[in-house]
Structure formats: C-alpha cells, structure tokens
Image 1 (tube, rainbow, N blue to C red):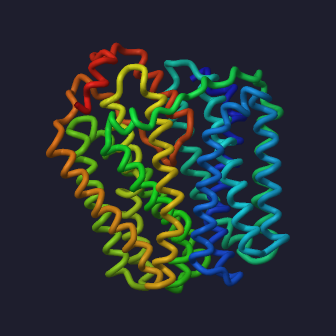
Image 2: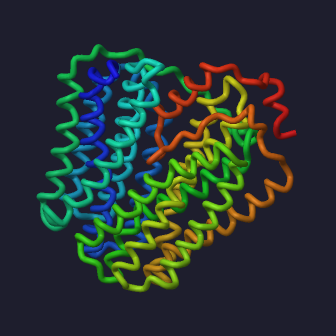
Image 3: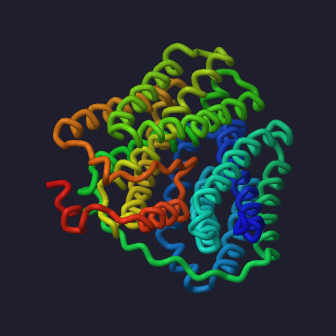
Length: 424
C-alpha cells in the first residue's frame, strides 16, 4: 500500500493521542475517587467533556480553514496538555469540570484534524485499508494506555505528567512528518429535521448509545473500585469491554449486511440488555465474573452506534451521507451529555450496580422503539444498502468521508426525490 508511508507520522500521532485520551478518561474516575469526589461530581465531569467534544466537532472545520491543519493541531495539543496539568495543580471539582470541558473541545478538534489529514492523503483504492489500520491503532493505543495507571500509579503528579507528555509528543510526528498541509475539509451543513426523517430509529439509537456508552466510559472505573477491584483490575475491566466491542463489530456488521439491519440491532440491543442485567444483578464483587460479563457487554453495547449509522445510511439519498453522519454524531453527543450525570446520580443513591441498571433501562426503551419502527416501516431494499462501517469510537470526520467516498464510487439506485419520500 504505497499511500500508507507518508501517513505513518499522522498515524503515530493518532496513536499517542488516542492513548492519552483513553488514559485520561479512566484516570479521572480513579483519581477522583481517591480525592473524595462524589460519583455525581465525576459524572458531571463526563458531561462537561462531551459538551466540549460536541462544540469542538461543530467548530473545528472553521478553525482548520482559518489557520491550517498543523497550526490548529499544535494549538489544540498545547491547550489539552495544559488542561491536563491544571487538574493536578488545582485538585478541585470545578477546576476539573472546566478542564474536562476544555479537553473535550481539544480532543474533538485533534481527532478531526488527524482524520481529515488521513482522508486527504489516501487514494480511493487504499481508503478501506488505511481506515482498518487506523482502527487497529485506536484499539491498541486505548487498551494499552489503561495499564499505565497501575504501572505509574494513580496518585501524585507523575501520571498527569505522563498524559501531558503523550499529548505534547503527538506534535513531533505532525511537525516533522514529510507532508504538505492538505486542503481544509468541506463545511458540513447540518439538517437535523431531515436526518431524523431519514431514520428516526437511527437517531434514537445514537442518542441511546450516547447515553449508555458515555456513562460506562466515565463511571465504569468507579464501579470497579467500589466493588473492591485494584487499580490494575480497573484497567483490565475497562480494556475487556473495548476488546469485546472491537472483536464482535465485524461479525455483527457482516450479519447486518446480509439481513434486515433492524433485526440485527434488535438482537444486539437485547444481548446488551441481558449482559447489563447480568452485571447489575448477578456479578456482584466476583472479579473474574465481572471481567467475563463486561467483555460480553462490550461485544454488544459498543457496536450499536455503527449499526445505527449503517441503517441510517441505507435510507439516505446520494448527497446526504456526510450531513447524515454529522447529524448522527450530534445525536450521540446529546445522549453522551445526559448519560454520565444521570447514571452517576443513580449510583449515588442505589450503589455502583446502578450504572448497569441505568444502561438496561435505556436498552429496554430502545428495544420497544425498534419493534415499533419495524412494525410501521419495511426494511430497506437490498439494492439500496451499503456496506457496514465499523467505528471503535464515534469517529468525527474520516470515517464519514470515507464512507461517503465509497458510496460515490458506485451509482445509487434512488433519486433525491425518492429519498425524501422515504419517511412518507
């Protein structure tokens, strides 16, 4: 793959950033508990992060157009590293909430710059393979970074210094890589009403997944600590869910390409519900049982965003893919803003297992809506369906543009007018 060589510096920067972001998400909960912060306070930090992330996603294209990829990346990395160090200088709930908001904004921009850079630097024939390499980097970095917490220790200054170093080092391959500054990505015009009309099920699914996945990402380290796990066990617990989600996305995607995606969404949601209830009601404080069931939970909870997005794209017109996926990301972000604080309130009142009771409740509602939508609307025709695109996280730009580019390269059987009549 000739086009991969020049992109190695960008992939290296992505790996460092993804690892630092994954490390920070877990550490906030682990260190927050040590500092005496309540679950509600830590949940609000998660809400602040995803609020900043949403604003960053909406604003980053304008920033890239104003100053270019490299300067935008450098500025955001410097701010993100500074926000990380502020949290250890001032151990205060309000300072941490503000720092997490700033981090969310910066990481949204940093990931979008990287993904836009990758998209501009890859040939159409190599697009899918580069995206696969990016996913591998994503999985390996986020999983491996979890174990820096027990290695370095969650207390003291060192672990925050490690995070700041990782964010700062991501500037090196970007600054020294042999790449010219690519053109800025196109502006994405959001039409939330049209996105909802294309697929109400997908929009609701993204909100539901945003609520549950963000709550798990923010609060699962608190759950693990509250049931008596060590710091190393917390890292393993979080990693098991990530690995499960990565391994099972592709079989689920293959099944959704062959059958009605809504049936796959229905089964996947039911299994996510069952595994959430199993952790909440049966796992107790058994370490191995929690590891095993959270792996299953990750297998079915994490791919739901990708399945919902794929279902929506089956209904979209030929010029709507980028707009639609941007709108779905916004729906996800709305859920992600609500989820952590709501689940944390439940944990404070009912105990750590309320995290998974909260997720189970969201899945029950989504199951009912899925069954209803299947009753009132038929499946998409086989000729109108694209291929499943697996997302290890809510990718901001690169996966959307790659998916759109792939769909452009083959004729779409529907006209725009017919697409607009889909909901009617």
